[in-house]
Image (tube, rainbow, N blue to C red; front, side, top):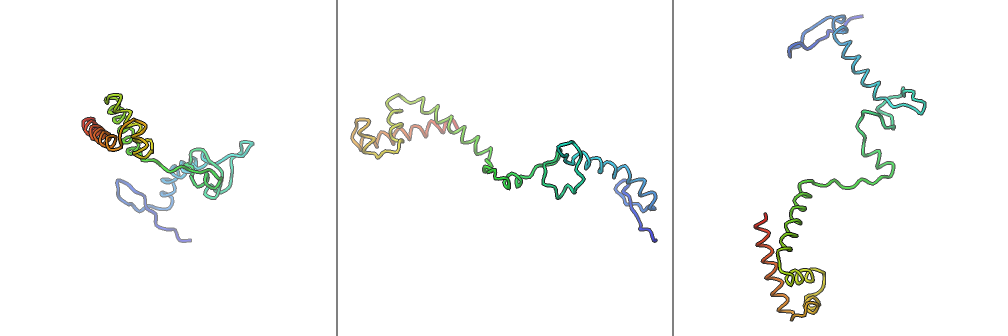
Length: 154
């Protein structure tokens, strides 16, 4: 039987070695790889390690990354991932808007609160006790004031 030419890496250089030297050099590497694989094997209810091929196993193994596909297959719905930067920016904007609204006089806050309840302009104006055109003009003026305040906070 003809032996293959083997190489080991020494100082970023491939060095040709005999089969015997190669095996001795690689033995600790192979042992460590086997140890890691053995530790990550799943166990049955009696604590006995599984001897099946881990790549084909559908069980959860310690030390191994879990697949989201396993959860989906089990019927668990995975929520869409959120963009942390967008969520933080939105939270900061809400906080700035709260501060800006708090800086307004009570009558202006009331107009803004009623204006953005989803009512028509006519209904909102009636709730405040103003004419529609007066309500719209005041609302637009307050919104402009809020924009200026938000620019300062930004």
